[in-house]
Length: 394
Image 1 (cartoon, rainbow, N blue to C red):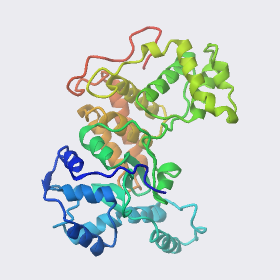
Image 2 (image 1 turned 90 degrees about the vertical axis):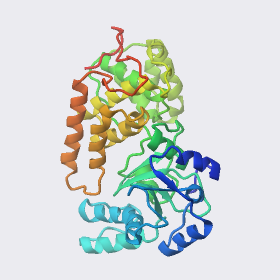
Image 3 (image 1 turned 180 degrees about the vertical axis):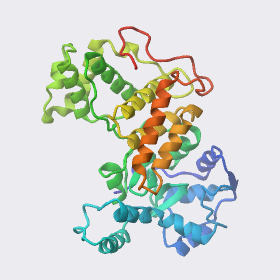
Image 4 (image 1 turned 45 degrees about the horizontal axis):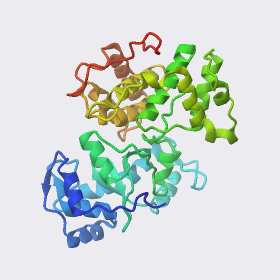
C-alpha cells in the first residue's frame, strides 16, 4: 500500500514543526549525511522524514535518535526493535501471522520461520521514542505508528500530524489508515488498536436511561471526529428499542439489514433529533477543540473500562490520544497515561497485572470531581449534564 497523502514537507514547514518540540535542534543533516546513514544501517528514510531531518536534527534526549553522532549500536537496536518485538510475541505470547505457513510445534522452529518472514517486511524507522515511520524511499504521508511488540497503533495521520499530537496536544480529525503491508495487519485487523478507529466497546446498557446515554456518547464521539461502524449505531438503536426507548425512527435504525448499512448514519441522526439530544451537546467554544465533549467522553471511556465493556489497554490508548493528548496533557490524567505506557511496554508477561492497574486508576479518577480540578488552563467550569432529563453519570 502507498501513503495516503502526496504532500511533501518543505524545509520551512519542517522548521515550524520543530519549533513545537521540547528538544534542542541542531543543524540539519545534509543529503550526503542522510545517504550515509541509509547506507550504513541498510534502510531508507521516507521523503518527509528526510526533509524533517534536513531542516534540523532534534537531540538532547535519548528519545530522539541522533543520526549524526549517536551510538551506532543504539541506533541499530532502535531499528531492530519492531521486528524483535514481534519475535518476542511469537516466542512468549503465541503470536502467529495468518499469512505465514502453519506454526510448527517447536518454538525454536517457529522463531526461525518468523525471523525469515520478518526479513522481508517494510522497515520501520524511529522518529521519536517508540514512534516509527515506514522507511519507504520517495514516499510521504505515511502515518506515524506507536510500536510496542505487536501492540501497534496510529499516533498521527502523517509526520506533521504526529508532531502536533505528541507535542502540542492537537491532532487532525481526519481518519487515518495504516499504509504499509504487514504492519497494517496489526492496526487494521490484528491485536493492535488504531486509536482513530471506532471505539471497540461492547454494549452495556440494562435500562432505557443507559441506552440513551450510549446514544449520546456515540453522538459526542462523532462530534469530535471519531468514526463508527454502521453495526455499532444499529446495535445501539436495537438495545435502546429493546429497553423501551421510543422514537419514530428507532425501529428503522434497529431493523437495518447488512445490505442497508449505508442508511445507518442518517437514521442515527434522526433518532438523536427525535430524542432532543443534539440540543444538549456541548459546543466547541475554547481554544482546545471540543474540550467539554472530550472530558465527557473520557469519563465515559473510564466507566467502560471499569465495567468491563472496553479493554483496559484499548481504552487507555483512546483516552491517551483523544483525551490526554488533545486536552493539552492535563496532569490529572498523567498517572493513567503512565500506566497505559507501562502496559504497552515490551514485557507482555505481566500484562494482566498492568491491566488491573489501569482499571484501578480509572476507578480512582471516577471517584473524584469531574472534570478534575487540575484541568488545563483556560477551561471553564463545565461538568456533566445538569438537566434532569439528561443521562446521568455514576
